[in-house]
Image 1 (cartoon, helix red, strand yellow):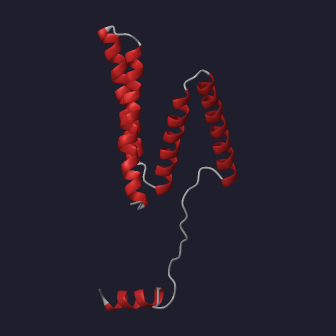
Image 2 (cartoon, rainbow, N blue to C red):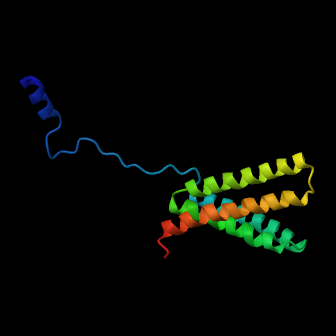
Length: 138
């Protein structure tokens, strides 16, 4: 660096003087009130669907539906959605492939529900352990 450049650099930003300051905040797509309204709406829809399942006698679905929702929210709360997203994609893949197998084998439709149930079990097995490890629960 030449002496002229060095002198110029020293006069532009002397030590001890703030040169650049910026406050960074995360982008929020919804204001807090909008988030609460959205969560209330989703909760009411989930409750209505759950009551429908209980009314037709499929009460275990209500509990597993709630457990899946809790796992998803816990994944968001920890700030890491990798395990939850992977488990959801795995669940969908198992259900879809099971449906194709039922069609290809011309099996009874009951086996489609078995494939969906296996997908739900896989979701729980792949999503829950990473969330427990992250929470520090022993």
